[in-house]
Amino acid sequence: MTSLTVHTLDSAPEPSKPLLEDSIKAFGMLPNLHGIMAASPQVLEGYKVLHDLFQKTDFTAEELTVVWQTINVEHGCHYCVPAHTAIAHSMKVDAALTEALRNTEPMPTPKLQALQDMTLLLTRNRGVVSDADLDAFYSAGYTERHVQEIILGLAQKVMSNYINHIGNTPVDAPFAKFDWTKK
Image (tube, rainbow, N blue to C red; front, top):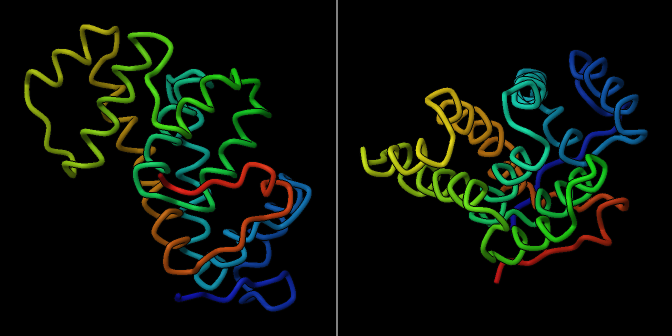
């Protein structure tokens, strides 16, 4: 299995250090994913910017969680599923929704199911969806804006999921209780 260096504040390239200091302030620790991304300050900054932008979208906390976890589970990310489970809990997302996402079970509402379906289509088909797919998504109450915002979340998750696969990123201690393996 491959692995990448998990940098500390001391070992990181100089341009990454302020970004890592911000991570420590935000999380009370240095997430291992950020330590790995620190090898490239541009990657770490890009990831953090995408994360911040995605959180400013029109999605609710539940919808953010559906998009993030749908992609994480589809990609089989051993690191991001536990991390986003912890994030969902901190955002007061219903634990039943989080468990449904982790276990690829149906969503609790038709609207969230439509969001998960569109997220899966965009992820699996690399952005190619039919007019009928879009019509079903719009009929559930979503708009063109939401399609584009899913793609923003997908861009963020591709960065983290792929780096975690290559890096074999160790799951941080606070997330370990949410350990997950793809079924």
